[in-house]
Image (cartoon, rainbow, N blue to C red; front, side, top):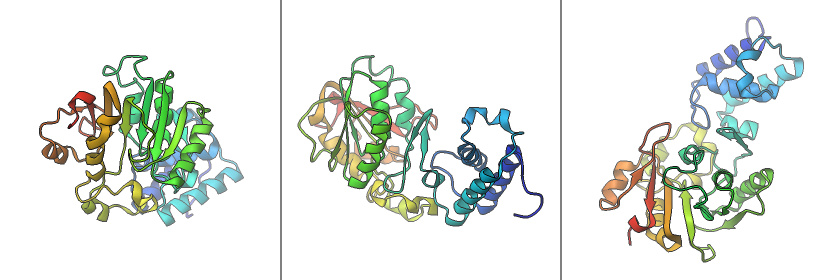
Length: 294
C-alpha cells in the first residue's frame, strides 16, 4: 500500500475500488462493478447492512478490520477468485446464501421473478408441489419455498458436492421439512410425481463461450456451466421430459442465458413466453404444460 493509508470506510471504499479497477477484474458473481464489489467486501468485513453504507462512510476501521479488508482485497486481486467464494456468501435480493467452490455462485433472474410469486402467471396458493432442477447451492429451492409457503419442494442436482452446499442453505432457512434434496441427472432419478411448477437454471454456456470465459469463472464447477456445443443440451432434455412431471395446468420456467435466438430456431412451433427481468426479457422462458413439445 503506497501513500496515506485509508482510515475511514469512505477512504477504504475508494481504495478498494481503485485496486479492483486497476487489476481489471471481472464481475458477474453477484455485482457488476468495482464499486459495488468494494462495497460488498467492506460491509462484510464490518458486518454492516449494505443499506447503511452511505450513512457510515465516516466510520473508522479498527486494526482487525483493516487487516481483514486488506487480506481479502489482496486475495481477490491476486487469485481472481470470485468474491463470493472468498466471503463464503452470496446474495439474491435480501436473501443470503452460503456458497463455496462445490457449487456455482448463486445468480439467477428466476430469483427476481419469484419475489412476486411469478405473478400474474400463477395465482397465490396455486403451487402445492414444486421442483427445482439443477439446484446447485439450493438457492432457488429455498426461494420457491418462501414464495409458496404451502408448497412441498424437491431440489435435485447430479452433484453430491453441490447438494451438500444446498443442504446447508436449506438448514439455515429451517426448511428441512418442506425442501427435499435428491441426487438426479435432471429427471432420471426422481421419484414419480407431478408438479405444479418446475424451475430450472441449467448449464447453458456454449462450447465457444466456455473457451472465452474470464478467469473468475474457472473456479466454478465446469459441470454447472457447460451446456454443450450450442448451450442447449440440457434445455432440450428438460423440454423433452417436463410434460411427464407437470400436473395439468402446471408451468415450466427455465433460464437459458443468451440462447433465446438459438432456442427459438430449434423449437419454432413452441409458444415460449419470455419473462421480463432486470436485464431484459430474453433470458427466462415460461411454458404451460399444454405448450410443451409432445
